Image (cartoon, rainbow, N blue to C red; front, side, top):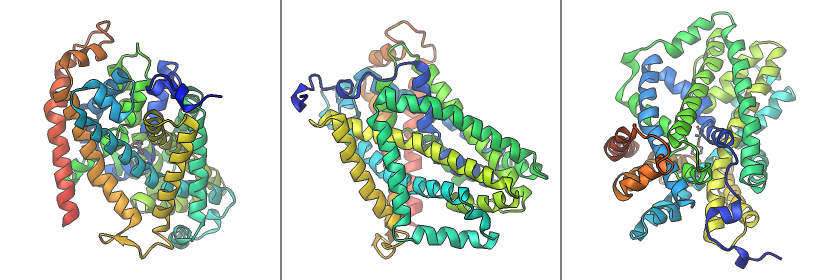
Length: 464
Ligand code: PHE
């Protein structure tokens, strides 16, 4: 019988198998991580709010110059070390033991993000059912908000759906890196693309679709405030899933002969394309039926169901399709977050992958359920004036990811040996890395400064 002592070499590979089997699988898994709730409900809304085309322009600069740079950085740290965050830092800089704390912070950040992520994913899963059985289509426009509010305040229903979503995620992780994550991503990402495209076609062929397209794309620089610029950078990082070690773990699974620069470029471009397509799927429809572009939960769980109802019977089909799309996007993102924590636990304890998955899933369910109940039974339970969900949301948006991201770029830019970085990016000298001096400059100077600005303005704003 295999026991803990049979774990011979203590790298991630020993228990989590051999990493992704192909470049295509690696890209699909990483795009799966990147494309999530952030692309579909957050990006279109903030793009419209902060000046459409003007915001897009700034976003493109940030996502390619800082987001993609961070992704390459995490891939280099992960693939070179073949370890999860704490050991990945130590492997690349064995003499500086303190860096392991940055690794722990990354894992903790993933735990906080997934615990909040599964709450919203659970709502989404419930709305698939609600739209399929006709509950949503039987509601009047004015009752949508009430329906949503009473659902999230229900003592156990949101927790039940969170449980269903999290268990599906855990099953995929139990399948392993190749047979679970990679196999599922290779199927789900193309499905997701088709769903977005179908919804886009429906949306832009509705009457007056051009009003929504104009709202989304026409550049209005007067709406692009300092706040909009910071939102663009924060969104660029969240959307690419960088700044919490997820891409360090996925980096350790990337095939040794993959070109890290090209892979990162493809992931960044795909993630951005899906975000823009989500906007095209949503806003023309919203404006066509005379609705207001709300943000966050209001847009997805109140405005959009009203829009689908206005489409008549066929609206039910589009509603199911939309919530299914959202749930798929959330699933492949949740997989990457859960994988990061499971791979870490597996590597740093004597637990096997299956036991690690069970332990981490229970922790996520417990914290997630508490966050979910912050809208219902735990409404009165406040931490520093916020309910638990909002408290975790603040940690996840203002503090944890920028701190981890700053640590990661400083680590690569100022702690790792330049030759080691070039060696990894060039696949031991077999690829040309003409871009290196630009990358190195961005990672050493531009990224840390930009991230510090995001962190401090976030803190100052939250204290006001
Ligand atoms: N990128 C995901 C999204 O856009 C969120 C995410 C962040 C996933 C960090 C994994 C790690 O929704």
